[in-house]
Length: 422
Image 1 (cartoon, rainbow, N blue to C red):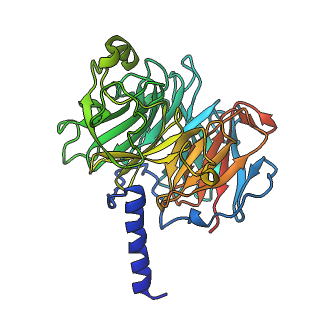
Image 2 (cartoon, rainbow, N blue to C red):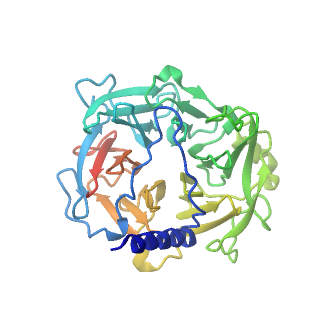
Image 3 (spheres, helix red, strand yellow):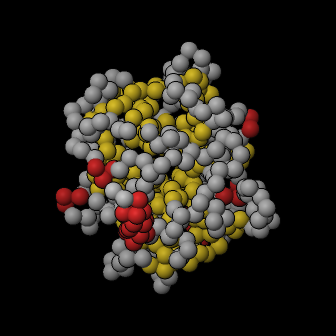
């Protein structure tokens, strides 16, 4: 293959990605400070070439040819002799961050209520060995998902009526975590940062929930600053143009096509939004999204899932349009393999990986041409759910949890590391 041919093929792939997944050009994210946000190097594994799943391995994972897996942490147990804390219960959303010594951490939420949730960090050395486990957030409740920031912190959301977002230091201590109430008071799921438009997006896990954004003011995120203060800005909700407030997109409103959207300021942003909606009734601003879950920003597009209708959405901030890229109900039967959509992440090549809460415990991949492939299946833990998919900084490993699984089936949570083929 000549260099010209290779260059042309890659250019065609980028255009294909733009057309299929609305990727509006690379945004050139730059890591600022340490720890750096994990940005896999190179193009990564091509999930279009996934083979069929094999038989369950010793840990109950069915994997394609060339993939291997191991257990790296079990809830209630110290993952290594040098760990400073046992791995937490009910692991949920997570992400990885590079460390200065060439290692990395896998940061993960604990979805336990009554102030017993929080966040832990699983530390790996440069050879990939687990060397520590520590707490980086304590005293919070039902920490479900969250999001990594381009400036190297983890935003952890509480899924309670009075839930807040907490900013944590992946290589730091629990005492360094800071509450960010400007990001709203509601049943938080995930957070994603668009550094180009200096905007944060947030999902809400409610049947009549909303899709939010926080637009940083110029004082909150000055042009000269590496990051925002997350104290001053506008909290808004999305509304499809032409639809009344407090309305779920009706039959005949074609969400499979890009539809124009607008943003409306929330009412009483310092008050719990569930209470505000209850008081406002049909006048509550914004389009209804049924159970917002996973959320990820990649290459100019914001992807998120809604579990109440088994949909994956793609928001194009540059064009201010939103559409569904996967809908279980309308997908062709042979592609209807993904259900119970929950946490998600995006590969270096632009593939959307979605974990199932329910379904048949699969981690699925939506390719840029919108075909769906199954990456792995976990058997023997059907009462659990898959959570927290995240690539290691070099893109060669993938972390995923069984939230209520254990070595022998049911448990308080177990974390796997899947190694991808070279």
